[in-house]
Image (cartoon, rainbow, N blue to C red):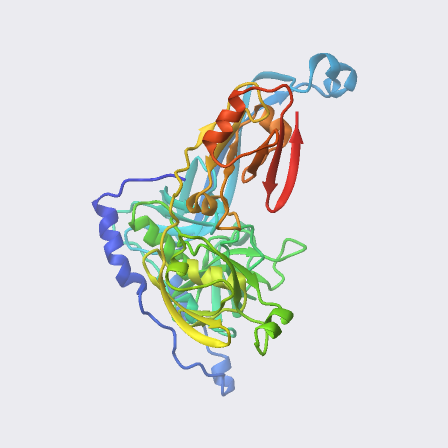
Length: 474
């Protein structure tokens, strides 16, 4: 992630954002009616499209990949490899340009653009082309891999067209939406559909990815483009499709606009992504659990464990409670709680409704950043041992959140990066928690360093990898 110091221009932009997207109170609760006549069915979306198209841009990302030239195929023969090895190469490294094509959305007149992180990931050069064919070099302001969002900035001579950001929580299944982007590089394209589902989870790579599902056609190149409502407000960033063929099958996913707002708030508060931390370990409410708790049907999220520093614990949440709503929105499962809680910025209060022994109770808790207690003391391991080539740190809520670990109450030493060496050959991975070394328990980085300083001929370790205990030896 890149961090930038914000100058006066950016401050002006951020101060005007409240007027752009009405972050704290804008609603889409207008009355919804079905078509009552043939004339209504044949109405056109052209006025909406004319309003929003200038604010949707094409994003071109360029990455220079350096690779050495391979030796002739003759040297791929095992006979030659036993003498010369597998790393045969000729001449100087060869440079190859890898291009990525996507879309983006202007969200301010001063040139701030939201797109998908995967569109610009690792790019050496980012270019933006507007609908009027003007081209600009873009600067990366902030990116968030876990939500797959990125914020770019271009500099133009005058004000640029932009979209107002709407309230994605006010969408309803069945609402009409338009998807705008540049599929397959053919040029700006508009497709129409309806909202098929809200807060769809379990389809992304991260536990912080929650989607609006739509049947509006989305294809490669649409990533980062706009999903807009019938008033021309941005309600989502088109990001992926479900397809066996690679083409659109009517199942597309967009990142809710309220998560875009959170990214912008993070940019305003210092250019670092900070998510609210609940400090709670939740479990789905099954039919058996619902029956044991006297619930008529299974829904909500059951509290299994609370971190001692959890803001929800301080607000009165207890083990065995069932969270059934947050900020007026019903909670169907554990992932939906994660979306509703983390979809608002740090500092904004969370209003919970829980079931405790059959009673409904209202709680209010602040959304707080995860604390770094204990200090991480990140250390690179070296020397003649199994762990050489690892970066390790003490587990804290902040580190747990960064690594996407599930249990908020874990303690110990975690691997934050595998740099190479014996550790890479042994099969260690980022996120592995070191439990013991040669039979001795490990609780802190200092304890691990002391155990390694003693030296050993054979190293044995036990690690926790996403809930599974594995043993490694050398």
